[in-house]
Length: 93
Image 1 (spheres, helix red, strand yellow):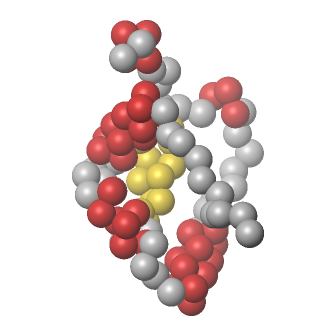
Image 2 (image 1 turned 120 degrees about the horizontal axis):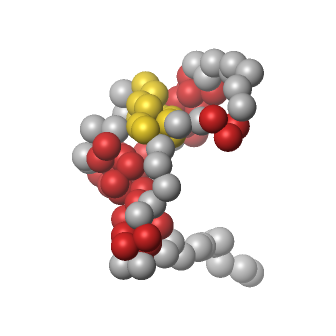
């Protein structure tokens, strides 16, 4: 029997993920992620349905995108954060 699938997250990627969440005001994102792991399938389905149902698809040039959209599952709302390329110094950390 195979074990569960796992993956490793690079420390640089994790730092950027954390920084982006914090820019959105989601400072307790780690606690929220842990809480989501305990949700039953019905709640997960309802939140996923609301998440996908609230997306507005507008024709845009992908290269012109200047924001990242983050969904907060706890409060079921989107947060938009300005996107910028990581600094060379930060990506070398």
